Image (tube, rainbow, N blue to C red; front, side, top):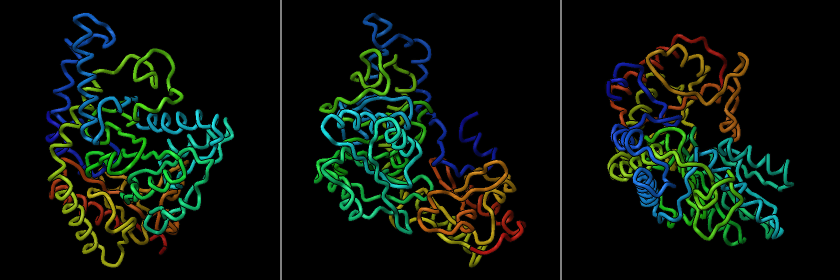
Length: 392
């Protein structure tokens, strides 16, 4: 059964920001490296050479997608690992130069926030957490006020995975550089959804995560120019410029490269298609639930595929549990039977009741108008049948 047939036979899938299916072209590219091209890429014989060529090809393909060169790509096992390499790898050497300050912002991915906390706990790093406004945006002037001559690194993600809000990365990176600091951005949510060019953004480090753009899970990359020699995230052999040891996961890396090629091919037409579908879904829900829908995130500067809305008077997790014809996420987490509002939405100044009513609806490569009709109908039915929980 093809992925298209599988999606058509199941609930409408609107959770592409959580993970994407592996594209059939990506799977096809991977298959030889799961069978005949099984060699270790470090082996110089006839079985190792095709594997080495596959890794080299993938490195060039990922580099091309983001405007880099192959030598600037370091592969990793996940986006979280790539983020850890960027933060920990950059901060530890900087300590020897008296730079013990890191700046990030409060709606970052947990892999960044938890790495910051570990650096504070284990190495005495000083961390500044920038606030965001009601749209989830960092104020560049807040960053300017935060950086000092002790700042080693600034890390701000390119887009938020819940709201889709896009940060002004080029402006933020320029401010970091004025203070002599490096700039890292986690672009896991933007790669393949909008054009991403490391030169135009002016970043020093950038994270790419495979399963967010139709490659397999368990593979990622960090854009990291050759001039950087960081503290490795995994010690051992000489793989990945000694930044990340371990025999390469060749099939997954080939898949990452193939996904990069497919993303580059679709970028001219896929973002406007998804933005039109997203806006149609917003309109459908607003008409079906008049006066009860509020958009969370920036109305303009956001990902083309992402719609985060709160429905007045409803707990979204309960509504989605009842909406069996829809696979989507809420912006809240359930712990021991009690619902906790999204930290991201609370950081934006959104009230707890409104945050509990938030739905994250993210579209992707196989989303269709039929999916939107099914999703809108499922949410409307579940919300209409749910008891009111009080107004935000």
